Image (cartoon, rainbow, N blue to C red; front, side, top):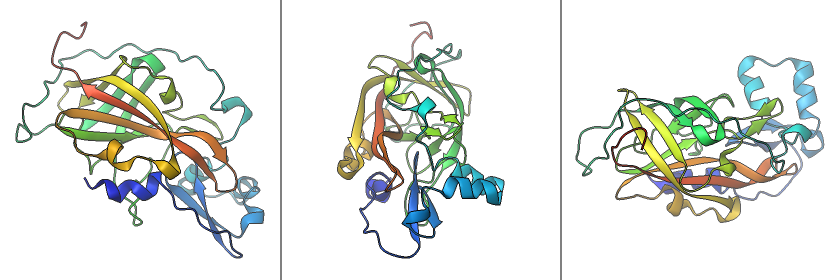
Length: 253
């Protein structure tokens, strides 16, 4: 994986506002909508509802006006924990040339109540990380190693929408030591321990630190966070969870 390919997603360039059609970045991930001028941007959500766009367009529109009094990212909300999944743990590979690691199928984060299937994410024509088509599932970036393989695996998800929290709404509430479970397509569990949670201003996003190569199996969970800027139509920061894979042991350990 070339980290530079993803740089524009997490470090969006500042563009001058000018007359005529402009692009509005959708909060949550790198989704953008073309709208006829800055003056109409704040009314776009209402216009879309009146026009009755189709399902594919509605999925993106739901992410546009993410500032909602019930789902303020600064609000203190209590997560409902979910039980850890049962099953055999996968062993970390001893070397890069080890057996092929199956692709991920499901993600569970007990501490923050996350249980989601995992879809596959690629790059957009603009070389930005393609977002999941819905806020209710997360996605594995297929340009990164599969979780459990040597290297840095990347899973991304939306933080919210106008209708409520997204799958990674409480990602920022994780703490070091808590566990993340990725069920592989073969049925085994790749189990990770959170090492740190960081929030980065997008203009200073440490691309190579987040996406760079690693000598052991590591995991990055990524969503948007911080302040939502209505002028640019984007959150100003990203939340990144760093985690390392645990060796095979008893699921109760």
